Amino acid sequence: MALFWASTVGKKLVMAVTGLLMAGFLVTHMTANLLAYLGPDEINAYSRFLHTTPEVLWPARLVLLASVVLHAVSAYQLSRTSARARSEDYAVHRLQVATIASRTIRWFSVLLALFIVIHLLHFTSGTLLPGFLEGNPYANIVTGFQTQRGMAVFYLAMMVVVGLHVYHGAWSSIRTLGLSRPKAHPLVRPIATIVAIALWLGFSAVPVGVLTGAIRPAGDTTYTAHAR
Ligand code: HEM
Image 1: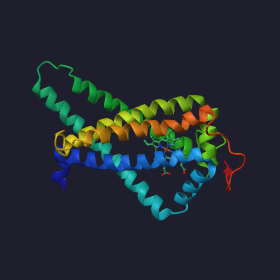
Image 2: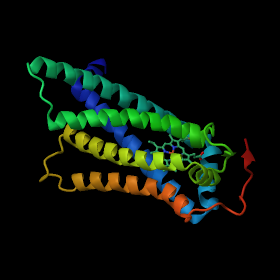
Image 3: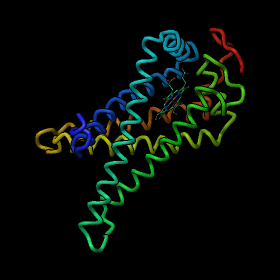
């Protein structure tokens, strides 16, 4: 196990598997968010189900947390290894296209980590959302994007980063798992592209819906919501 973790291939495999788990979470989260287009009942009922079913919520949270940590630690260690290899290999360091792409991805990863912290303080704890209503994600989404326009713009920009990160990650894990020969697996790359674009558009559709009035404040809420 220690040998597996110490190897480059082992770390890349950890990145690929944790990346896939997180992509699964993102597709589920994005689909659930789109329930907001159906009105408050559906999305609030989904949230209530999760929050009243700890045997689903907590294992999912723990797997997600472990995935984020393992993904970030292996990414950091892999980037150290390749930086060392580069400085040994080249007397003159040339900035290649691949280097620029991986640098961009590194900065995007930092931005994403920052986004997740801000996002949890915004819609989960409500620290950054005046008028946050516990157990009423519909109202929180509407209030959050209607009264905090800067936040809506920030989310929209970050969803581009999410899409690009998933696209890059899917592509490099395909290479890691040795599946990159386009002839052998002609559908793999298009699927990665479609998932990345679907996440970008699906997530962005919610702030856009609030900003355009397609998702608007509910007349009343269907189950007890307590203002903090
Ligand atoms: C426009 C895009 C997004 C919107 C509108 C949104 C909305 C929400 C809302 C309303 C909640 C609270 C749900 C509840 O309490 O039942 C939530 C939780 C969460 N979101 Fe998002 N989200 C978005 C994008 C993302 C992205 C891109 C990520 C990850 C990179 C993410 C990660 C999370 C996590 C980890 C939670 C906490 C889940 C838990 O309670 O354990 N979200 N989101």
